[in-house]
Length: 261
Length: 272
Image (tube, rainbow over all chains, first blue to last red):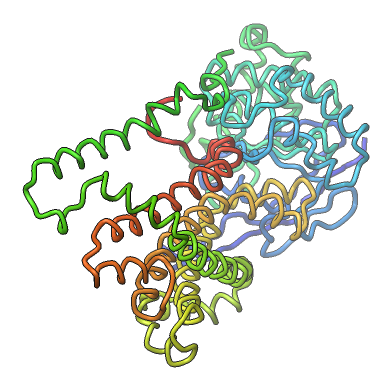
């Protein structure tokens, strides 16, 4: 398999206007993600994991280093790197289906094909019957499903997710995590997932990369060998799950950062 | 999974809603007014009764004086509104989207917006003479700033995450403006338009009292000169009714179809 996303020696320093000082958020981060791989980046708050994702998305510029996606250098945001945000970020003035087909409209795809793809992803994320609803009429979990469908329908090279389930309740979160693993396995999506929750990362991923506290350096890079499809009931009983979790926790701990599990 | 859907999409208003919400408040108001005038506390000329006002309304309508004055005033108000918006809305978006434009216009706008439209009356008369030209000018000066100011506030309030989200879906600058900035600023633009029209009415009436020889403001002022107090009230009420009609027939329906439907604003704090 080929590397579809390559981060090469990425550093980010920004000026903190409150502290009136330069802050090094990331220092020399290199990371490769292979096609169809689900990679999570974890780390304590402030370790620069979200900054890293934003640089991959092209929403922030690195101070030095570069990101390449399919060999092409990232210079700004683009449809090949669709992002799902913690705050859903659906357009309130568009219905569920209009939000999901938005990227396809931007590409100028003809209406019939657009509708067909949109309906497929509406069904895939379980929003059938809610096509004509506006985001404010949906629950938090449904909004995030719509946000995932919106990016997937656009067929990105890599799906970027920035703590997407942090704002939903615990029950819904587990449902969404299980659904995400089955959808991304089904669609063979390449995913770069950011979270501070170690168990979530282990549950979802093929590979988990742990960052130290600020400035973020890679302190662990672990392949997760758990059978798919994954269900929480099975995964928590698998002793490898606990082993991965403890190993990652240990790595971050010994890097001197506080950890939330 | 729990599904939170507000009780049905807003139902179409029917007569059952119409009577309590639109008729009862006014009926109570008129009854109170009649009761107060029947109590004969003040002389008739200081406190005309609803019946006298109704009579004056019919007489002024039949004589053609009221429709003529209303037409003159509405022409000025509408034209002033169109001119103001035609400048303020493009300028607002330009200022919102370009730092250079914003930095240049912001100090000027801030200086000028504190000056009441009516303060322009002396120059309006010098430049345009007595008449609707002068009135139009001060109306434009009154509507322009609230529209611009609220639009700018709306642009500042656009959530960055919405822009970023559509950028990662492939949206360029034009698509961001069309699909995010325009709809996101609509609630504030509507507020600006409401305030603008309200300010426009103030300037219209004030301007016509001083700088014109026709229109509703002039009619109110003129009636006072002849102690025709029912006709003063006719002029005042006409303004109120025109505003109410604009709100109910134009502004509200726009909001119900857009910002309220999108869940950006609602009627009150109670759950729908």
